[in-house]
Length: 553
Image (tube, rainbow, N blue to C red):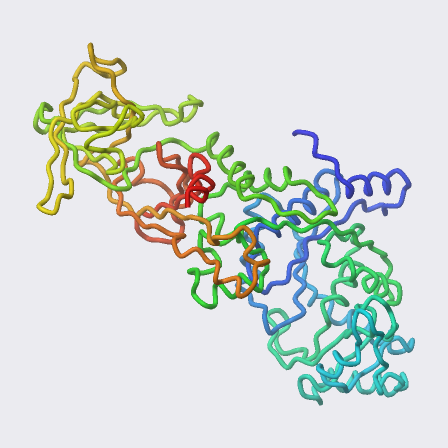
């Protein structure tokens, strides 16, 4: 295993180890998603960091669902998150936890805060609470209910739990500092009333802890040593520390923030992704155009490529946007190494070899990978009627054209040299068939006096298998759809999906779900995992064509 890259969080852990600050149990991290949507590429960075640190330092990483909002959470999301983390290559043994596992302990902590005079029940509406909170330049004002006695607050809080009050009529707030320059410390809410069914606890509760309160204390309950999160939680750290310091917990975890992953030509806001699913812009959370882990998986991106990408971008405290080209380069490198080669014709044009014996089938042996003999070989049926790609033929072209031209020759990949002698057309001028000559002694050599322009791929017309091929482009037309003015959905690329009725070599008919291949001269493709028919999704092209295409527009 290669030496992991050094970064500031590793330096912190190394210092803690050297100073003996870690408990006897060792390093403890956690990945704590909210189960209100599918994971995306930004989560992958956090997953690789938290699980990777635990692995490298001989510690443990928990998978914990911070499930404090039953209005937005579903079992589907819980199952999808666990499936995605495992697919990325990480395991948590039996340490799958939920914030809801600790609802009784969290409630006891809230009562303890009330007893200390550090929490109170507030009757202000949500709008009034926002008004009283103040602004970045003006301090907040005390709620008129802030001076309630501990006994009155405890009675009201217990009645909240008993279900006496309607949603939104009361909240439990921390009593910290309404003049704090950090708005998060201006008496934040700790509990709110929600008469909602919870996917783990059913109808046992009608009050639910707020995320900041539950998150900090769940870390403490689990003995987390390094609570690692993204930079948007930096201003929440004082509240995190306040909750840990003032509640009856034994462990004192510390929060450390790193820059979140911003990927160009994508959105990584769960709220934005939810909008795309809800309004039908995409077919679902696992649409191959989505930057969700499920979407990337269905598109054919290998988990090793995602892990490599997360390692390359590093861990810093500076926000930056990563170019899509860097991600795609990681995918290409991994697939170039691991994907067997096959041939597929996306835009079939019939080609007849006039001098090929009628009905003769010759089986040609072709390598499944040009750089790795362990992939073995496969047999290609060669017949007198073939399909080539319509884009590989021009009636006339200059010498720069390295494909087939009327009256000139090319080599068919892994097969013979052919020459186009006749072009057949429909009444509207559409080319319907090419009549060609095959040089029968040209396997592996060029015929005397014939210099093929280049090499093109093909499939036998009688043995080829029909397949649907989906070519995906980037979902957005601008690198930063979230930063532009107006609704980010106005930048959705209307040309992000092209569907081809293709013909593929017979070996592909047996491809299993999620099997990945290089379609020679076309790109990397994956057998779709959801469609019942033979459907292939393009993972990435053989090279970056997006920049060239964008630059020519």
